Every structure is written in structure tokens, then in C-alpha cells.
Image (tube, rainbow, N blue to C red; front, side):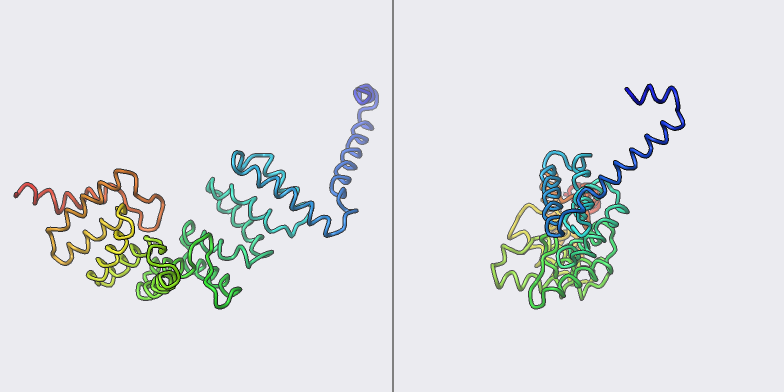
Length: 291
């Protein structure tokens, strides 16, 4: 209220004084942590990061969470965790440009942790298969003799997927085999992600190895019998082999399980109900009418 009176008398000087005060406050804010030792700044930065991370469950992407991450980074620009988590919301809203700016900084600061994660995102989101392979292999180089699991998925499986999407089906099968053989040896077949067998089967279909492909789809279904993709691609392989009697049976199972909600969404080789219905129209409707 004192400022209001002063402004009415000498407005130009008051504005200059106010600006100086604001700049002074900003300077103090920027320098408020200068007295701390570097270990103290690292510790305080992690405290702000953890407060931001605690917001994830109910308030991810909120103004409060972003401010907490920004504060963590301001205190310690080398806080890779804060850079990484700050980008999590951006990828969920489709802002990939901002996401990768933040992710690239996290990788720069801590490639042992985040390079493989970035590779997985490049594979699934950007469809940048060669860069994905480079990141996943680069991450694995930090752990010689050990299979890495970027974002919780076997590195050989991820590279196999990327190779498959590049059309390099023979190499894809080699990597799928590495993944499956290692897991089966250590823990048993049921611990292998059933999607591996589906994708390996699809790769074999591209190589016209229809019998081997059917075996892969059967392995997947043996371990989990509610996979529309396995039934659907098995039907396609059976059709190629001229085994029409089993084609419609598998397409019907594909439609049933897909209709029950077991179909994967937003994945490589996305299967749609319309794909199954079209195959049924082509190969099953005419047969049913003839019968």
C-alpha cells in the first residue's frame, strides 16, 4: 500500500525501484543454495525429486510435480532421475520432442541406467529401429556377460523385434532364440513372454516356414490360451498349407478371445477385430454356406 501512494507521485522512479526489487529477489532465489556444499545440494535435490515422484500416483503431470522436478534440477543439474521423470508426462501426452530432450539429458548424465530405456521407447514409439538397436546394444555394453532388461524386457527380445520390423527375419529369429533359450534354461518355458513365440512365428511366416510358425503359435497357446494373435496367425499359416479344416476353428477362437478383451492394443503387428472378421468372410462364410 506504500507503493501505491508512491506510484501516484513519482511513477517512473517507483517502477524502476520495483523492478530492482524484483530482480534482487530473483537473484536471491537463484543463489539461495550457493552456500551449500555439493553433497548437500545433491541430497536436497534428491529430496525434491522424491517429493515430485510421490505425486505420480494421483497427480502425474501436475504443476506442483513439474515445479518439484524443476527445483531438483535447479539445485543439481546433474540429477538424471529428475530429468528422466520430468519427461514421463510428456510421452504420455504425445509431446515426443520435449520428452526426448529430457530423456537425452538423462542418458547423457547416466547412460548405464537410461540408454536402454530410451532404446525401448525408440522401438515402440518412434519406430526408429536402427537407433533403438544402437541404444539397447550400447546399454548392454555396460554389463558384459549379463543380459540386460531395458524397461523390464529382455534385450535380445527387443533387438529381435527391431530386426523383425526392419525385415531382417533371419536375424530376428536368432535374437528371439537367444532370449527364449536363456530363459528356458534358467527358469523354464512358462517364464518366456508368450509374445516372443508369436513374433517369432510371424517372422517365420515371412520366410515361408509355415510349419515352424505353427509350432511357435502352439507354444504360445500352450502357455496361455487366450492370445487372439496366436490363433489368427496360426489360421493364416494353416491356410497357406491348405489345411482349411482348422483355419476357421482358429479364426473363431481368435474372434472369441479378442471379443473378451484379450487383444493387445498399440503393439507391433496390431491385430484388429476387422482383420479377423475379414479372414472369416473370405475363408469361413462361403464354406458354411456350402455345408
